[in-house]
Length: 91
Image 1 (cartoon, helix red, strand yellow):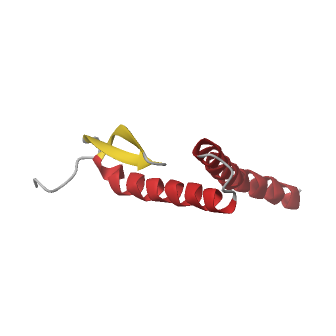
Image 2: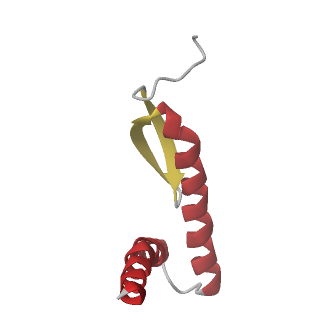
């Protein structure tokens, strides 16, 4: 039982994003996800930096954030769009 993680068990982790440390308090169950997303953010930021070397790190982080925002918007709009299309077909 000692190895089981409780759903609301809060832990502290430090992640590095673009070389800067950030101390986070997260649910223990989310730790792997947080580390995976941190790697994705760093990879995306590095890709922007490689494609546009004249941009500073802050610009590349902003572009990464915008990319995630667009992906999230599209993902959340799909169910709405599909539902609206379904309603139109049933009319």
